[in-house]
Image (cartoon, rainbow, N blue to C red):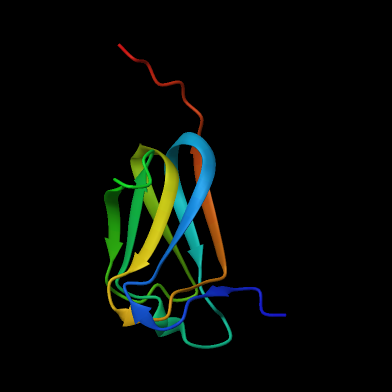
Length: 109
């Protein structure tokens, strides 16, 4: 059994993770395939937000991520949805995604 999620080759493939509620995200750790094709995961962009239809671009990495890569957000980014997308005509393969953060109360003031 292959433990990774993989799209077909397509233009701008993406994957969205719903965290179930909004969190302040401080770090995202992406795990790539180790058995082959480490160069496929390139031109990777990260979108985060609370509205699936209007996510904010928060990070970009043009070079291949290799086996693993960590996106750090020093001030934290608030959101319920995390979207990873490749800005190319390519496969999107993700073997594991770890999202780190905290559940801080948001004031309406």
